[in-house]
Length: 521
Image 1: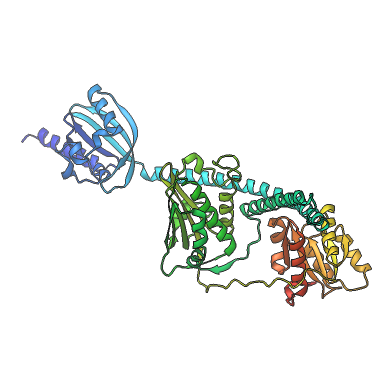
Image 2 (image 1 turned 90 degrees about the vertical axis):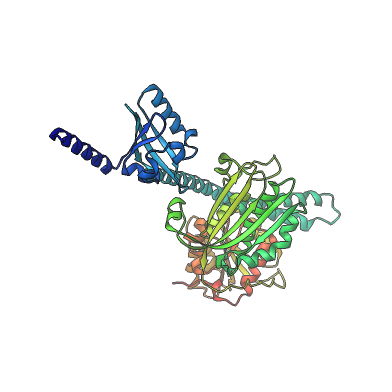
């Protein structure tokens, strides 16, 4: 053999070694769609060995490939002898998906395909896109939540006035008075408004919750008959509860509201009947899941899934379902607050909501709540006071003139002696002037000069036996920032009604607990 022949063979071997060392895949496809050459990178990318590919057609090695966009580009390059580029998503033999950047280069024996695996970059970009979208959605929900909380606060003061004076009118009207039914309608409308503001506060995570350690299986079991009545006879209710289910720390009544709202939505999505499945389970949300779902803390969780076989939702609808007042129902059939309330309660409980739906295929909501290792706590029943009347002295501090007038009227009608103050400074002066006992400070939480809890602390040194009851129309600033929870102060959520106010006043006055007093320190 001549030296030139040996040099040619050595060069060919060197060229093949170079091609095999490339990170970029290289494969040569003949005019009959047969693999003529495949380097190591292309074999790894396609999850087939070189021996499985070379000498066989693409259709033999990857059934169905001739129906893909990539094959259409390859066919055009093969016939027209042109170059081309594309990004291609490829279903690999193990069922996973891969993304490849492809270049098609005509060669004398067919077409050379150069392929670069960009799967990791695509996944990272998709994760970033989802994170950015979740962040935008979270920021939008936060802004809407602040707006909703502020509106609810102001609206609760207005409703206090309507409900209060409505109650005064009803007390003065005879049972047969023709005006009585009209005043009752006003009260009913105001009560519905109060329910709406409560849901807005739940959505904006500004409602005061009273968490307890509960077992979701027990909670669902206790709601079974009620849920079946809501669904009706044409919807089959199926419960799939996990054995040894972990416990969660939630406000029981709020989680019941979450379940009720999801069930009502599911019923409305199945107008001709169907199946509703309630499922519980223990799950662990890992770091990867947390990275892809903003606000999720990795670790053990308890899952509650609600699945219906109803009409389902498209992607555009799913993107807005948690926004308050967004609804796809006919006018007058829904307020658009139900799923907003679900979102708010779950978020405030430290949990996460996941939804999957397809038009015509039904919807699944999954609620993930952090699992706790603690015994189930019994829900303590509060005995109602024997009477709503009293003769004690109450110092009332409220900066809203109309709300103060309503509270003053309610308390005086029930027999209390009331000292009124328009702000904290006036309350301090009134306390100094009053020689007798002040049994209770009833104060709004947020006032211009100082907060209700701070007013209570200022008065505590001179009046250590005085009890404190704070009230507010919202809880974000008023409860957390102003230290109502930390001080263990009794709290009343506005709007005020005669029964709610006088019941809470008697509970606090009759309580032997020191938590209704505040320390001067």
